Length: 350
Image (cartoon, rainbow, N blue to C red):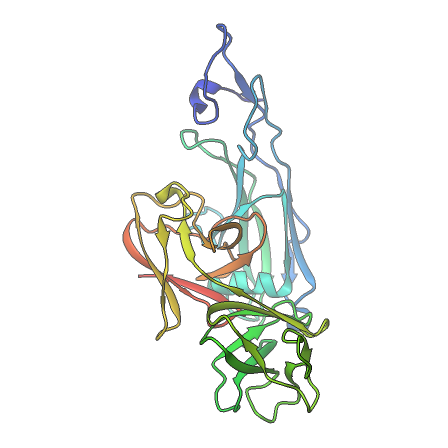
């Protein structure tokens, strides 16, 4: 077992020695990676079903001094070559396992250039990092043969209609197809709207509010429905639960970019909303590639943010701890965030 002198890890300890005794860390070893299957044929008819599990052991660090929680960082790396000459994806990990549904794994490999209905090999390894000044450790490499399906653009949407049904400017999506929809919209104060399952005045299901004062946030699909409305206006996050027949709104006061490049500041790099193009933008200056990726905080919150996703150019919405999304540009670039399609939140760097 490797023993690492804490003098190499000053970032973790304020003092490197006490009364002549030099602290030590032990337990930093390569992970051992295993997979639930080595040959996976993805099924478009069971997109939400489990397709693959990756599992690995985590090093148990011990020290003669206290160690900050999260000292050991692990990530999954994916490649189409056994040599990992090119790393197609890196996914930061909190736990020591990761599961993929058919849809998630299909999105991952299609984003890496796999061809639908053709078997190709995916190579996976675990990377363990203890400190920036120490070389990372790599697990064994697992090869998984995967046959993807042809993806479609179908989504489970609710369309926001104006009160005349002449315009459908925004939509909400139930990404889990469980009757709970969400999305981001930009509307004027006192905007009146309906939510419909089709972008048509003849939609088979149209939700408004219950026709009784005090029921603004109660969804109701009867013929005597009132329209829904928001007294806030501006940029909003909406959720609609057609099981509980309720909707909610949250005012988005800020989106801010954070990462190593700005010391993980929650305020240093705010984004600006481009109303015409429906995108958020921020100028980012880095001197090295972001080791842990970057996050976009919503309203300055560390528990509500955009972080890593499986698909290229996409980021996921999180309400708990998760890794950032990949950012390997060096220099000054413009980061753009497009939230107009709630099925897939997209970002680009120009």
